Amino acid sequence: MHTQTERCVRAVQSKDARFDGVFFTAVLTTRIYCRPSCPAVPPKPENMEFHPSAAACQRAGFRACKRCRPDTSPGSPEWNVRADAVARAVRLIQDGVVDREGVPGLARRLGWSTRQVERQLLAELGAGPLALARAQRAQTARILVETTGLPFGEIAFASGFSSIRSFNDTVRQVFALTPGELRARAARPAAPHTPGVISLRLPFRAPLEPSNLFGHLAATAVPGVEEWRDGAYRRTLALPYGHGIVALTPRPDHIACRLSLTDPRDLTHAISRCRRLLDLDADPVAVDDRLRADPLLAPLVDKAPGRRVPGTVDPAEFAVRAVLGQQVSTAAARTHAARLVTAHGVPIEDPEGGLTHLFPTPEALSGLDPETLALPRSRRATLLTLVRALAGGELVLGPDTDRAETRARLLALPGFGPWTTEVIAMRALGDPDAFLPGDLGVRRAAEGLGLPGTPAALTARSAHWAPWRAYAVQYLWATDSHPINHLPA
Image (cartoon, rainbow, N blue to C red):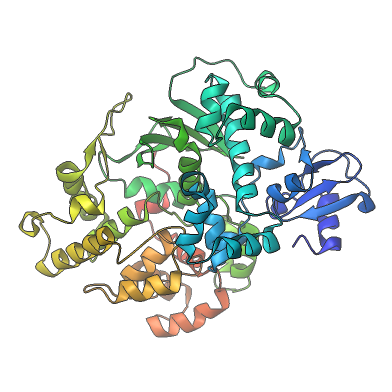
């Protein structure tokens, strides 16, 4: 969109928050860059230029506005919709792959050369992978500076910088402030600092309907790994450098996020996972406008606009849970998963109590005795085949996954049909167009609304909802009184 100058100017002049993170406004006279909704008086159109990413603005010599803080904008929804290699590269960079594995590691995951990665990202985002990772490191550093009492030396390395000098230089270049000045300016109430605990706000594009999002996570929570407590969804996280516990609380204009990490280097990765879990980079206006065009869906959208698709913090974990949930109730699926957690999960300590384990990895499950599983024999075979494929690398699920190829690989596994494959595509791969025409709840809702009742006919009708059919599923599910559609008391 950044190439559509007139449209961008209109968005800036109207302070349209829907475009925050979609493009960035660079002001030629002040050499700062802003989000479109910046509350400052808009500059003259001839003094504006537009960039597709914060990294592109920084690369062009602009620094972040101190008023609207464009570096904290929600991510562009484009990278969730698109399934090509550039979108996969962006999702991997957001996941911290460049910091952990470098550009060669990013290129290897994509099956490209490093030169191809540089060229493609520069063409579409105005910045290469190192610049994009640097911008993300700067934002991580800012969060740690403003929300913790960690020494700046620890923050530098936790943010992914190779030296304290590069940390200081980057912070000054990006924010026009020193780390000390950033900390002094942080307008936050004084609170006791708990070592290893980081509190921050996760932004999103309004509206956001929390009922089905948090209701789904709470209703399907696996004991020991997840819980709903005091208005917050809490769960354990297995992270590259250690583990963590996150508490996510819905607020009117943000999601309150409280992270307890054993290693602060995992902050970027943890934030990325939480944003995918809650689908926070979605564009609800674009989604709802498309679905509202269908007169049978319009009343559902108007009743509770802004529904999100619940995701996952671990695609492999969700795939295992999807198999455990085949043709059983939500309560039975939780019971089966809890048994696996108790027997094979890694124990952890939760200072607040309630959470006891990390969900077991595919490697930990690949050698389990099938006779210990209280499942039908065919489903035992399906589960073992899945975890062994995941553990052996024959099947990869993650932000870099090719969605079409992964669907084909899943369908080739014994016991995997369209429902299991599509629910994994929807929640583990983040495909906004995944669809479940054979799901019982979807079919009941469709028939109640006067939509076609058979999977084939419903699939044909759903073509008008593309590329947002996963969101249509959320609206259809919400017609039922199931606990997944309601926030717990």
